[in-house]
Image (tube, rainbow, N blue to C red):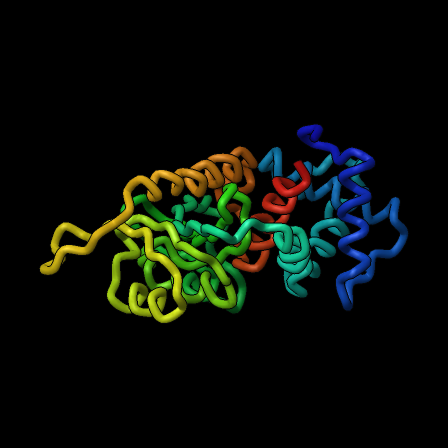
Length: 251
């Protein structure tokens, strides 16, 4: 994949998926490809929408269409179609803090909490909670404020997922999650916290496979618009996150 352009094959795969999404107006294929190319340029460069090169079209029109797709969940649905190929034998989950730029604050008629922004030890930002398959390919995400505990989003991430094992770090070591996994017949590969009164076994050999989700975060943060959050609206940042994840599936 070119860093800032889609190949004909990649565009063909995206177009085929878009046409299957209900309620999505693709329009002229060439115009849609130009639009997605513009979004890719912004995603990769991390630049402001206003400095989008004119060859990609009018920045304001591109931005408005991107925002509409975010509001309608198009980017998430697109990722959902590609992630149907996921290997869900084992799944890993974790969270990563995304530092927010000052321009991400101050969304009109909203609050920092509503836009998944907050303060953690790392400063002002949000946290992306992720679930990936056995090969480290992205499946789904949840956004919260940076101070949110990762274990609180575990059940939401796992909803509807049929896996044999769940790999996660000790931040997910809660009785509630372990009981839920046992009830679902899923193996919990989660190290126990040091303050547990009763020891719990963990398959540490299996746990080594959890590195795939750390690698996923590294790949996603190569896109500058992911490494730093500039979007005021949580749905817009989720759109960027879903789009970048879709690009990983295209490789």
